[in-house]
Image (cartoon, rainbow, N blue to C red; front, side, top):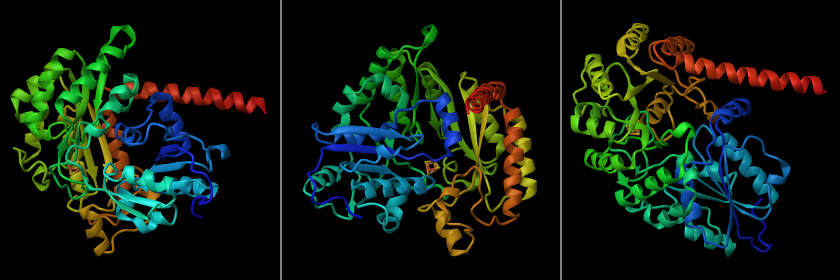
Length: 441
Ligand code: SF4
C-alpha cells in the first residue's frame, strides 16, 4: 500500500538502522555497548528542514505496535544481512500509512527487491538527493528511484548540524573522516564514489569538542573510535590528522591498512597522538594474493610478523582480522593459519567467513559458477553461515575450521580473560533475570 495520499503531511522523520542479530544477542550487545546510531546516520537530519521532528532508532530491540505510526517519512538504511529485518519494518510502517524510503548498499544493488517493501529507493549516497526526497514527500509525489551522486565535499553541508549535536553522542557514534577506499578487495562491496575526506579543520573542531565535554571515570581520557575503513588511506592526511590530534590529548582506536607499519613517521605520530589499537585486515596468510597489501612490502607471513612487531614497538596494540574460505585454502592452510596465529603476537584475533555480498566481485564470480547456496540474506552474517560452496572442502568443514580457529584465536589473546569475564557477567545477569521472571509467573 502506498502512503496515505489524502492525508495532511506531518513533518516527522523517523530514521532506522535495523538490527542484524537475534534479539537475545542484541540484548547482550546493548548490555555492554550503547550507541545512539552511526556517525553517517546524522547526515540526513542535518539536511532535513528544521521544522521536522526527528527520531532515530538504532538497532531497536523490540518494536511495539504503537511505534508504527501512520504519519511520518521513514528512512531505513539497509545492508545485506539486515535486509530481511529492514523489509519487515518497512512493511509495517507502510501498512500503517507512513511513507517509506530505503537506502544503503544492498538496496542500491537490488532496488526492485526493496521496492516491494517501500515507496522509494535511494541508490548511492543520499546527500545529493535527500532535499528532493523530502520535498516530494511533502508534495505527495515521491518517485520510486532517486539516484544520488557522490559529492566531493559531502560533509560541509552537515557540518553545522554536527557542531550542535551533544559531543557525548558523537563520542558514542564514533567518528568517520573519509568515504571510499583506494583498494578493491574481491570480497568487499566497493563504496560509492572515490576516496574523499572530511576537511581536517572541521574534524579537529569536532574532536576538540568531544575532548572538552566527555568525561570518563577516574579521569581517563576519552577514547575516540575512528570508523574509517582505513585511517591510513592517505598517508599525508593521516599524518596531519595525528599531528593535530597531539595537543588534544585524546586516545583513539581505528582500522588501518598494514602499510602503516612501514612508515616510521606515521607510527611515531600515531603513538604520540594517542593511538591505542589498530584493527588490521590481514585477511589471508598469503598476502601476495591480496590486492590491497601488494602495494607494500608484504610477501609472506614473515613480513606480517615484522609489521606486527614494528607497530607494537610503538606500544600500539594490533587486532588482526582474517577471513576463512578463500578458494586457495586447503585443510593444510588452516593448520598453517593456526600456526601463524600462535606466534603472531596479536592482541586480538577477529575471524569472519568469506561471504559473497551482492556488489562484490566474488558475488559475481560465485553466482556465475553456480556456487551460491542460498539467497536468504539473513544468512549473510559472515559468522554463523557458509552461503557458498567452498572449493577444496565442504561448507561444513569450513564452518568447523571457523569454530576451531575462533576458539584457538581466543587463547592467543591477552583479552581472552576480559572477554571471558564479560561473558560470565552477561550470563549471570541473564540467569538472574530469567530466574526472577520464572518465579514471577
Ligand atoms: S581495504 Fe577494506 S574497505 Fe577497502 S576494499 Fe579492501 S576490505 Fe574493502
